[in-house]
Length: 377
Image (cartoon, rainbow, N blue to C red; front, side, top):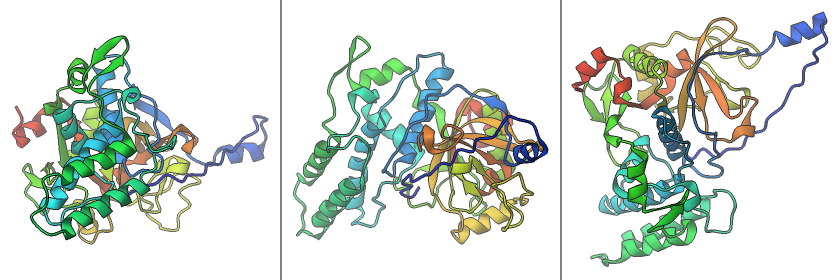
């Protein structure tokens, strides 16, 4: 996803409870949502001035997995995983002579990969704020890292064997040195032992997508820039991808969602995302008729890059508006004060069908017939 930096203004509308026709008409405006499914999840966090939504969404997913498993609530460190991701991303960038992607963006599997390799820590053990700020501001550190890597690539070959140590020192100075041990709730852990104590099995998590330029039910290297590690995604027809999301949420499993939020039908401040049939439709004021989304339309928009890999969020439920239209309750990482829904929003099924680039789910959340087609046991 691109570097989505949260700049959100929220208007609170106070409505009088005194009944009169004018008030009744005013109350009919807007969206009224009923929750059909709402999974227990950890509190909404804030990625602030950083392009790390991929990590915030995936860590939220992991925290929610722990709750689903009956474990205590944990506040896990996003920046611990971000820091380790930058190390591997820099190594690949140099190996590809500067032709691999290096920026703030990433994918859900990046957080999973780094947790597999380096463990994980709670937020209190690694807030990642060693640069004199009380919020995440990554513009400067990214510029410094990018300049350093350019200097390495422009230098006379062979490269020295310590360039990566120099790069790691940048991260130590900005984010902080990685703790070898830490105290948490009266126990002493290493990152590896803490991960083991959580009981998460990362082999259970798979990524799915839906694009017709690759065979169905096969895995392929998804062609988006932030898939810098060239991981594979399983390919499903669109109806089955939506079926997986529905089944997952109904069975108590949440979903990491990766997609496009650049269209005018996405309004986090209003807590809604739709695909209006009429581009001039006042969708922010009340539910409107939406486009019918086909496999061909989403493929066309992916091909011409109208639909791009912008942002990752976390699906934690299903809702319906006053007209019975289905939405997906979506946990964003733009803080609780970013809208009147406490940082959540409702994305309609047409919006999901058109704008989903990929999802991550637990294997057990996939319907048996689809899992069989994918070759899962």
